[in-house]
Amino acid sequence: MIPMLFSVSYAGYWGQQRLTLPEFFRKAATLGYPAVEVAGKRPHLSVLDYRRAEQVAAVRESARTAGVEIATIAAYNDFTAGRHAVEVPWNEMQLAYIEHLCWLAKGLGARIVRVFSGYFTDASEYQNDWTKSVTALREAAAIAAEYGVVLGLQNHHDVGVSVDGYCELLDDVNHPNLRAMFDPWSPALHGTDLYQAARRLAPRMVQTTLADYVKIDRFAYQPQLVNYAKLDPPAVRAVPLGDGFIDLNTFFRGLKDGGFNGYVCYEMCSPLRGGGSEANLDLAAKQSLAKIREWIR
Image (tube, rainbow, N blue to C red):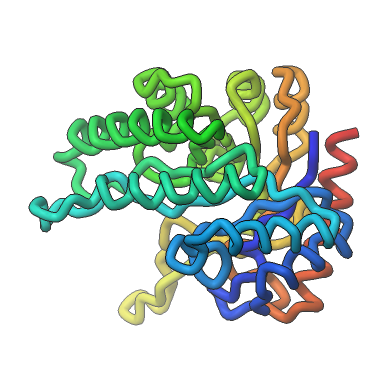
């Protein structure tokens, strides 16, 4: 298994420190990460900003000089979007976006383009949303094959988010260039057996992405009762790997027993305990890399 760091961690989306791509590559190398995943949007690898071969070559050289491998490019897509504007070719635009990321991945020497499925917006549209996602993912996988890269489907969105649903979705797409990028975050929140889930998905996986969280109970004051009503679900806050409620020891046992030998990515993709200063991000990234190396061993 190869540790990697996701550039979203230093992209400034949640008020944290923002680094340019060259700065991020140097940061990842300094922290000890041998590989990186790069966000396929501004401020990092936007398809609008990187359209020429010489621009791509400059990014590749920047990573090479820093001493890190660009392994994965992350798409941000939602194949169930656009229900209220059916005349707009939403999925065609998203597929064109994914195709450009595949072109970028090939030019950067990356092996994987991360994709999502889609958000449910209406329970009555369950089957339609499922079918939209399957159709678009199959076409996206065929596009990826033309560029010699694979798509990694990350289980972060509503369509196919359960373990059983995720496996069904992969089976329905049924394309060799769509692989699993199975993470423990959503299954842990669902109360799923992480060992069994990891062992089941391990043979289909090219990458897993890790974050850890603490749960924060929520309550609403009821003045007429002079008491509080508990609200569900609890909120969660990101913490360094090993400090939260996700049983990553068990998850890694399942990965190993299932034969997984791909990339293990750390991401700080939401507000982090301690704030978004560069020093705090660095501290979390260092601690998390140490835990990843421990679990790999």
